[in-house]
Image (cartoon, rainbow, N blue to C red; front, side, top):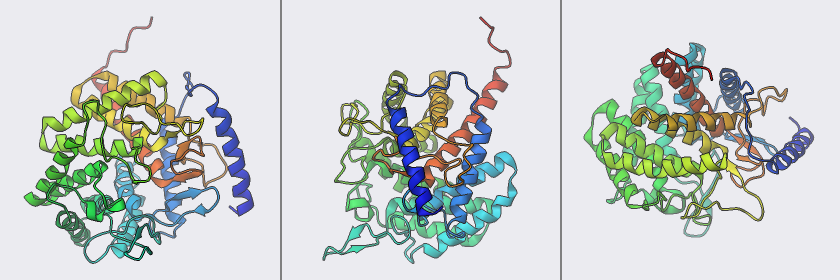
Length: 411
Protein backbone atom coordinates (compact mmCIF):
# COMPACT_ATOMS: atom_id res chain seq x y z
CA UNK A 1 0.00 0.00 0.00
CA UNK A 2 1.17 3.54 -0.68
CA UNK A 3 1.08 6.27 1.95
CA UNK A 4 -2.07 7.89 0.55
CA UNK A 5 -3.97 4.57 0.65
CA UNK A 6 -2.77 3.92 4.21
CA UNK A 7 -3.91 7.36 5.35
CA UNK A 8 -7.32 6.88 3.77
CA UNK A 9 -7.67 3.45 5.40
CA UNK A 10 -6.60 4.89 8.75
CA UNK A 11 -9.31 7.55 8.58
CA UNK A 12 -11.94 4.96 7.66
CA UNK A 13 -11.00 2.54 10.44
CA UNK A 14 -10.63 5.18 13.14
CA UNK A 15 -14.02 6.65 12.24
CA UNK A 16 -15.60 3.19 12.31
CA UNK A 17 -14.08 2.35 15.70
CA UNK A 18 -15.03 5.72 17.17
CA UNK A 19 -18.67 5.20 16.23
CA UNK A 20 -18.58 1.58 17.42
CA UNK A 21 -17.13 2.62 20.78
CA UNK A 22 -20.23 4.75 21.42
CA UNK A 23 -22.43 1.66 21.23
CA UNK A 24 -22.92 -1.12 23.82
CA UNK A 25 -20.37 -3.98 23.79
CA UNK A 26 -20.56 -6.13 20.69
CA UNK A 27 -22.65 -9.28 20.65
CA UNK A 28 -22.91 -11.89 17.92
CA UNK A 29 -26.62 -12.62 18.50
CA UNK A 30 -26.30 -16.02 16.88
CA UNK A 31 -24.56 -14.77 13.74
CA UNK A 32 -22.33 -17.54 12.28
CA UNK A 33 -18.73 -16.65 13.05
CA UNK A 34 -16.97 -19.21 10.82
CA UNK A 35 -14.22 -19.95 13.35
CA UNK A 36 -12.28 -22.25 11.01
CA UNK A 37 -12.13 -19.56 8.33
CA UNK A 38 -11.03 -17.04 10.95
CA UNK A 39 -8.18 -19.32 11.94
CA UNK A 40 -7.11 -19.79 8.33
CA UNK A 41 -7.21 -16.04 7.69
CA UNK A 42 -5.21 -15.27 10.85
CA UNK A 43 -2.53 -17.75 9.79
CA UNK A 44 -2.46 -16.39 6.24
CA UNK A 45 -2.00 -12.87 7.61
CA UNK A 46 0.88 -14.11 9.78
CA UNK A 47 2.47 -15.67 6.70
CA UNK A 48 2.14 -12.31 4.95
CA UNK A 49 3.96 -10.73 7.90
CA UNK A 50 6.84 -13.12 7.17
CA UNK A 51 6.83 -12.43 3.44
CA UNK A 52 6.92 -8.71 4.22
CA UNK A 53 10.44 -9.18 5.66
CA UNK A 54 11.48 -11.55 2.83
CA UNK A 55 11.65 -14.39 5.33
CA UNK A 56 13.84 -12.57 7.84
CA UNK A 57 11.50 -13.16 10.75
CA UNK A 58 7.93 -11.97 11.15
CA UNK A 59 7.16 -8.27 10.87
CA UNK A 60 6.19 -6.71 14.18
CA UNK A 61 2.93 -5.80 12.49
CA UNK A 62 1.21 -3.57 10.00
CA UNK A 63 1.07 0.10 10.99
CA UNK A 64 -1.48 2.32 9.30
CA UNK A 65 1.04 5.15 8.93
CA UNK A 66 4.34 3.32 8.49
CA UNK A 67 3.26 0.11 6.74
CA UNK A 68 4.91 -3.20 7.57
CA UNK A 69 7.23 -2.80 10.57
CA UNK A 70 10.69 -4.40 11.02
CA UNK A 71 10.94 -8.04 12.10
CA UNK A 72 10.53 -8.80 15.80
CA UNK A 73 12.63 -11.71 17.14
CA UNK A 74 10.59 -12.13 20.34
CA UNK A 75 7.27 -12.65 18.61
CA UNK A 76 8.85 -14.56 15.74
CA UNK A 77 10.04 -17.03 18.38
CA UNK A 78 6.69 -17.78 19.87
CA UNK A 79 4.98 -17.70 16.49
CA UNK A 80 6.78 -20.96 15.63
CA UNK A 81 4.73 -23.15 18.05
CA UNK A 82 1.57 -21.58 16.62
CA UNK A 83 2.53 -22.62 13.09
CA UNK A 84 3.39 -26.13 14.30
CA UNK A 85 0.02 -26.46 16.03
CA UNK A 86 -1.61 -25.36 12.79
CA UNK A 87 0.34 -28.00 10.85
CA UNK A 88 -0.80 -30.67 13.30
CA UNK A 89 -4.39 -29.49 13.01
CA UNK A 90 -4.60 -29.08 9.25
CA UNK A 91 -1.79 -31.17 7.75
CA UNK A 92 -0.18 -28.10 6.15
CA UNK A 93 3.31 -29.65 6.11
CA UNK A 94 4.39 -27.14 3.48
CA UNK A 95 4.78 -24.72 6.40
CA UNK A 96 7.70 -26.72 7.79
CA UNK A 97 10.04 -24.90 5.41
CA UNK A 98 8.75 -21.59 6.78
CA UNK A 99 9.48 -22.75 10.33
CA UNK A 100 12.99 -23.76 9.31
CA UNK A 101 13.50 -20.37 7.65
CA UNK A 102 12.33 -18.51 10.77
CA UNK A 103 14.49 -20.59 13.10
CA UNK A 104 17.60 -20.12 11.00
CA UNK A 105 17.01 -16.36 11.05
CA UNK A 106 16.62 -16.38 14.84
CA UNK A 107 19.97 -18.15 15.15
CA UNK A 108 21.50 -15.38 13.04
CA UNK A 109 20.25 -12.66 15.40
CA UNK A 110 21.13 -14.57 18.58
CA UNK A 111 24.06 -13.02 20.45
CA UNK A 112 27.16 -15.07 21.33
CA UNK A 113 26.02 -15.27 24.97
CA UNK A 114 22.69 -16.77 23.90
CA UNK A 115 20.62 -13.63 24.38
CA UNK A 116 18.31 -11.76 22.03
CA UNK A 117 18.19 -7.99 21.78
CA UNK A 118 15.00 -6.40 23.09
CA UNK A 119 12.43 -5.06 20.63
CA UNK A 120 12.18 -5.25 16.88
CA UNK A 121 15.33 -5.29 14.75
CA UNK A 122 17.06 -1.91 14.87
CA UNK A 123 15.21 -0.63 17.93
CA UNK A 124 17.25 0.92 20.73
CA UNK A 125 15.28 1.03 23.97
CA UNK A 126 18.00 1.19 26.63
CA UNK A 127 20.43 4.00 27.45
CA UNK A 128 24.11 3.87 28.32
CA UNK A 129 25.80 5.91 31.06
CA UNK A 130 25.87 8.91 28.71
CA UNK A 131 22.15 8.75 27.95
CA UNK A 132 22.67 7.42 24.44
CA UNK A 133 20.06 4.92 23.25
CA UNK A 134 21.50 1.46 22.70
CA UNK A 135 20.23 -2.06 21.99
CA UNK A 136 20.47 -4.46 24.91
CA UNK A 137 19.93 -8.18 25.60
CA UNK A 138 16.48 -8.75 27.09
CA UNK A 139 15.40 -11.74 29.15
CA UNK A 140 11.79 -11.90 27.95
CA UNK A 141 12.67 -11.69 24.27
CA UNK A 142 15.31 -14.37 24.81
CA UNK A 143 12.84 -16.70 26.52
CA UNK A 144 10.26 -16.33 23.76
CA UNK A 145 12.89 -17.13 21.14
CA UNK A 146 13.89 -20.11 23.30
CA UNK A 147 10.28 -21.28 22.96
CA UNK A 148 10.69 -21.20 19.20
CA UNK A 149 13.99 -23.08 19.29
CA UNK A 150 12.47 -25.83 21.45
CA UNK A 151 9.46 -26.23 19.17
CA UNK A 152 11.60 -26.27 16.02
CA UNK A 153 13.96 -28.85 17.48
CA UNK A 154 11.07 -31.14 18.41
CA UNK A 155 9.69 -30.87 14.88
CA UNK A 156 12.82 -30.92 12.74
CA UNK A 157 15.34 -32.66 15.07
CA UNK A 158 18.24 -30.39 14.06
CA UNK A 159 21.06 -30.32 16.60
CA UNK A 160 21.82 -26.68 15.81
CA UNK A 161 18.36 -25.78 17.13
CA UNK A 162 18.98 -27.64 20.39
CA UNK A 163 22.35 -25.91 20.74
CA UNK A 164 20.74 -22.51 20.19
CA UNK A 165 18.07 -23.39 22.75
CA UNK A 166 20.69 -24.33 25.34
CA UNK A 167 22.56 -21.07 24.79
CA UNK A 168 19.35 -19.11 25.35
CA UNK A 169 18.36 -21.13 28.42
CA UNK A 170 21.84 -20.73 29.89
CA UNK A 171 21.62 -16.96 29.40
CA UNK A 172 18.43 -16.97 31.50
CA UNK A 173 19.97 -19.07 34.26
CA UNK A 174 23.30 -17.20 34.31
CA UNK A 175 21.65 -13.77 34.58
CA UNK A 176 19.09 -14.62 37.25
CA UNK A 177 19.32 -12.89 40.62
CA UNK A 178 19.28 -14.86 43.87
CA UNK A 179 15.62 -13.96 44.45
CA UNK A 180 14.65 -15.39 41.06
CA UNK A 181 14.30 -12.10 39.17
CA UNK A 182 16.03 -10.83 36.04
CA UNK A 183 16.16 -7.09 36.72
CA UNK A 184 19.54 -6.47 35.13
CA UNK A 185 18.49 -7.80 31.72
CA UNK A 186 14.93 -6.53 31.66
CA UNK A 187 12.85 -3.60 30.41
CA UNK A 188 13.77 -0.51 32.46
CA UNK A 189 16.25 -2.75 34.32
CA UNK A 190 13.71 -3.75 36.97
CA UNK A 191 12.09 -7.12 37.80
CA UNK A 192 8.66 -7.88 36.37
CA UNK A 193 6.05 -10.44 37.37
CA UNK A 194 5.11 -11.14 33.75
CA UNK A 195 8.51 -12.82 33.45
CA UNK A 196 6.77 -15.85 34.91
CA UNK A 197 6.21 -16.74 31.26
CA UNK A 198 10.00 -17.11 30.99
CA UNK A 199 9.77 -19.68 33.78
CA UNK A 200 7.24 -21.61 31.69
CA UNK A 201 9.72 -21.86 28.81
CA UNK A 202 12.51 -22.95 31.15
CA UNK A 203 10.23 -25.74 32.36
CA UNK A 204 9.66 -26.75 28.74
CA UNK A 205 13.42 -26.87 28.23
CA UNK A 206 13.84 -28.94 31.39
CA UNK A 207 11.40 -31.49 29.96
CA UNK A 208 13.65 -31.71 26.90
CA UNK A 209 17.07 -32.05 28.59
CA UNK A 210 16.21 -33.08 32.18
CA UNK A 211 18.83 -30.84 33.76
CA UNK A 212 17.60 -29.78 37.19
CA UNK A 213 19.19 -26.33 36.96
CA UNK A 214 16.50 -25.15 34.53
CA UNK A 215 13.61 -26.41 36.64
CA UNK A 216 15.00 -24.79 39.77
CA UNK A 217 15.51 -21.50 37.93
CA UNK A 218 11.87 -21.57 36.89
CA UNK A 219 10.71 -22.43 40.40
CA UNK A 220 12.68 -19.53 41.89
CA UNK A 221 11.04 -17.10 39.50
CA UNK A 222 7.52 -18.39 40.12
CA UNK A 223 8.01 -18.29 43.89
CA UNK A 224 9.07 -14.63 43.62
CA UNK A 225 5.97 -13.86 41.55
CA UNK A 226 3.78 -15.23 44.36
CA UNK A 227 5.26 -12.64 46.73
CA UNK A 228 4.02 -9.87 44.41
CA UNK A 229 0.35 -10.87 44.43
CA UNK A 230 -2.20 -9.16 46.66
CA UNK A 231 -5.08 -11.03 48.22
CA UNK A 232 -7.49 -9.55 45.66
CA UNK A 233 -5.47 -11.08 42.80
CA UNK A 234 -3.62 -7.91 41.82
CA UNK A 235 0.08 -8.27 40.90
CA UNK A 236 2.71 -5.67 41.72
CA UNK A 237 5.44 -5.06 39.13
CA UNK A 238 3.24 -6.39 36.34
CA UNK A 239 3.71 -3.40 34.03
CA UNK A 240 6.05 -3.10 31.05
CA UNK A 241 7.44 0.42 31.62
CA UNK A 242 8.04 2.46 34.78
CA UNK A 243 6.53 5.55 33.17
CA UNK A 244 3.24 3.62 32.81
CA UNK A 245 3.12 1.70 36.09
CA UNK A 246 -0.19 -0.09 35.65
CA UNK A 247 -0.45 -3.56 34.14
CA UNK A 248 -2.38 -4.29 31.00
CA UNK A 249 -4.42 -7.44 30.44
CA UNK A 250 -1.62 -8.65 28.15
CA UNK A 251 0.99 -8.54 30.93
CA UNK A 252 -1.43 -9.93 33.54
CA UNK A 253 -2.13 -12.84 31.20
CA UNK A 254 1.59 -13.45 30.68
CA UNK A 255 1.93 -13.68 34.46
CA UNK A 256 -0.90 -16.18 34.80
CA UNK A 257 0.33 -18.26 31.85
CA UNK A 258 3.63 -18.81 33.62
CA UNK A 259 2.00 -19.72 36.92
CA UNK A 260 -0.46 -22.02 35.18
CA UNK A 261 2.40 -23.83 33.45
CA UNK A 262 4.22 -23.96 36.78
CA UNK A 263 1.29 -25.82 38.29
CA UNK A 264 1.03 -28.19 35.33
CA UNK A 265 4.76 -29.02 35.40
CA UNK A 266 5.48 -28.92 39.14
CA UNK A 267 2.05 -29.72 40.64
CA UNK A 268 2.51 -26.97 43.21
CA UNK A 269 -0.97 -26.01 44.41
CA UNK A 270 0.22 -22.51 45.33
CA UNK A 271 0.58 -21.65 41.66
CA UNK A 272 -2.92 -22.84 40.81
CA UNK A 273 -4.40 -20.95 43.76
CA UNK A 274 -2.64 -17.80 42.56
CA UNK A 275 -4.02 -18.21 39.04
CA UNK A 276 -7.55 -18.75 40.34
CA UNK A 277 -7.51 -15.57 42.42
CA UNK A 278 -6.76 -13.41 39.41
CA UNK A 279 -8.48 -15.36 36.64
CA UNK A 280 -11.75 -15.52 38.59
CA UNK A 281 -11.64 -11.78 39.25
CA UNK A 282 -11.04 -10.97 35.59
CA UNK A 283 -13.72 -13.43 34.49
CA UNK A 284 -16.26 -11.74 36.74
CA UNK A 285 -15.40 -8.36 35.20
CA UNK A 286 -15.78 -9.83 31.71
CA UNK A 287 -19.12 -11.47 32.53
CA UNK A 288 -20.58 -8.29 34.00
CA UNK A 289 -19.14 -5.77 31.53
CA UNK A 290 -19.42 -7.96 28.41
CA UNK A 291 -15.96 -6.64 27.52
CA UNK A 292 -12.54 -6.63 29.16
CA UNK A 293 -10.96 -3.22 29.70
CA UNK A 294 -7.24 -3.03 29.02
CA UNK A 295 -6.01 -1.52 32.29
CA UNK A 296 -6.97 -1.57 35.95
CA UNK A 297 -5.84 0.05 39.16
CA UNK A 298 -4.96 -2.09 42.23
CA UNK A 299 -8.64 -2.22 43.21
CA UNK A 300 -9.59 -3.63 39.80
CA UNK A 301 -11.26 -0.42 38.68
CA UNK A 302 -10.83 0.40 35.01
CA UNK A 303 -8.30 3.07 34.15
CA UNK A 304 -9.73 5.43 31.55
CA UNK A 305 -7.88 8.06 29.55
CA UNK A 306 -9.78 11.31 29.38
CA UNK A 307 -13.25 10.09 28.41
CA UNK A 308 -12.52 6.90 26.54
CA UNK A 309 -11.93 3.27 27.42
CA UNK A 310 -10.02 0.76 25.35
CA UNK A 311 -9.57 -2.99 25.19
CA UNK A 312 -6.28 -4.83 24.62
CA UNK A 313 -7.43 -7.52 22.21
CA UNK A 314 -4.28 -9.61 22.68
CA UNK A 315 -4.96 -9.85 26.41
CA UNK A 316 -8.50 -11.07 25.77
CA UNK A 317 -7.23 -13.87 23.52
CA UNK A 318 -4.76 -14.91 26.21
CA UNK A 319 -7.41 -14.91 28.91
CA UNK A 320 -9.59 -17.13 26.72
CA UNK A 321 -6.83 -19.73 26.80
CA UNK A 322 -6.24 -19.27 30.53
CA UNK A 323 -9.93 -19.98 31.14
CA UNK A 324 -9.84 -22.97 28.78
CA UNK A 325 -6.95 -24.45 30.77
CA UNK A 326 -8.77 -23.85 34.03
CA UNK A 327 -11.76 -25.68 32.59
CA UNK A 328 -9.50 -28.64 31.81
CA UNK A 329 -8.00 -28.53 35.32
CA UNK A 330 -11.10 -27.77 37.37
CA UNK A 331 -13.86 -29.24 35.22
CA UNK A 332 -15.97 -26.11 35.76
CA UNK A 333 -17.85 -25.29 32.56
CA UNK A 334 -18.12 -21.66 33.55
CA UNK A 335 -14.48 -21.27 32.50
CA UNK A 336 -15.18 -22.85 29.13
CA UNK A 337 -18.14 -20.56 28.56
CA UNK A 338 -16.09 -17.48 29.42
CA UNK A 339 -13.40 -18.57 26.98
CA UNK A 340 -15.91 -19.20 24.20
CA UNK A 341 -17.52 -15.82 24.77
CA UNK A 342 -14.14 -14.09 24.75
CA UNK A 343 -13.24 -15.66 21.40
CA UNK A 344 -16.58 -14.71 19.90
CA UNK A 345 -16.11 -11.16 21.18
CA UNK A 346 -12.71 -11.00 19.47
CA UNK A 347 -14.12 -12.43 16.26
CA UNK A 348 -16.19 -9.28 15.88
CA UNK A 349 -12.97 -7.31 15.40
CA UNK A 350 -11.39 -9.52 12.73
CA UNK A 351 -12.15 -8.63 9.12
CA UNK A 352 -12.00 -11.81 7.04
CA UNK A 353 -13.62 -10.36 3.93
CA UNK A 354 -11.49 -7.29 3.26
CA UNK A 355 -9.82 -7.02 -0.13
CA UNK A 356 -6.87 -5.32 1.61
CA UNK A 357 -4.37 -8.12 2.45
CA UNK A 358 -2.53 -6.00 5.02
CA UNK A 359 -5.54 -6.12 7.35
CA UNK A 360 -7.53 -9.18 6.23
CA UNK A 361 -7.33 -11.74 9.04
CA UNK A 362 -5.38 -9.42 11.34
CA UNK A 363 -6.25 -8.35 14.89
CA UNK A 364 -5.71 -4.74 15.91
CA UNK A 365 -3.74 -3.82 19.01
CA UNK A 366 -6.57 -1.95 20.70
CA UNK A 367 -10.26 -1.38 20.36
CA UNK A 368 -10.81 1.39 19.50
CA UNK A 369 -7.94 1.37 17.05
CA UNK A 370 -6.52 4.52 18.65
CA UNK A 371 -6.36 2.97 22.13
CA UNK A 372 -3.08 3.25 24.02
CA UNK A 373 -1.93 -0.31 23.38
CA UNK A 374 -0.21 -0.68 19.97
CA UNK A 375 -2.32 2.15 18.52
CA UNK A 376 -3.32 2.27 14.83
CA UNK A 377 -1.56 -0.99 14.09
CA UNK A 378 -2.13 -4.72 13.78
CA UNK A 379 0.60 -6.49 15.83
CA UNK A 380 1.74 -9.94 14.79
CA UNK A 381 1.33 -11.27 18.33
CA UNK A 382 -2.35 -10.28 18.41
CA UNK A 383 -3.06 -12.55 15.43
CA UNK A 384 -0.81 -15.24 16.93
CA UNK A 385 -2.70 -15.41 20.23
CA UNK A 386 -6.07 -15.26 18.48
CA UNK A 387 -5.01 -18.19 16.28
CA UNK A 388 -3.84 -20.09 19.38
CA UNK A 389 -7.19 -19.48 21.07
CA UNK A 390 -9.12 -20.61 17.99
CA UNK A 391 -7.13 -23.84 17.81
CA UNK A 392 -7.65 -24.51 21.50
CA UNK A 393 -11.35 -23.83 21.03
CA UNK A 394 -11.57 -26.37 18.22
CA UNK A 395 -9.85 -29.07 20.27
CA UNK A 396 -11.84 -28.47 23.44
CA UNK A 397 -15.21 -28.34 21.70
CA UNK A 398 -14.41 -31.57 19.84
CA UNK A 399 -13.44 -33.32 23.08
CA UNK A 400 -16.48 -31.92 24.86
CA UNK A 401 -18.88 -33.08 22.17
CA UNK A 402 -17.32 -36.54 22.14
CA UNK A 403 -17.75 -36.83 25.91
CA UNK A 404 -21.33 -35.48 25.83
CA UNK A 405 -22.95 -37.49 23.01
CA UNK A 406 -26.51 -36.69 24.04
CA UNK A 407 -27.64 -33.22 22.92
CA UNK A 408 -29.45 -31.05 25.41
CA UNK A 409 -33.24 -31.32 25.15
CA UNK A 410 -34.83 -28.45 23.27
CA UNK A 411 -37.04 -26.21 25.37
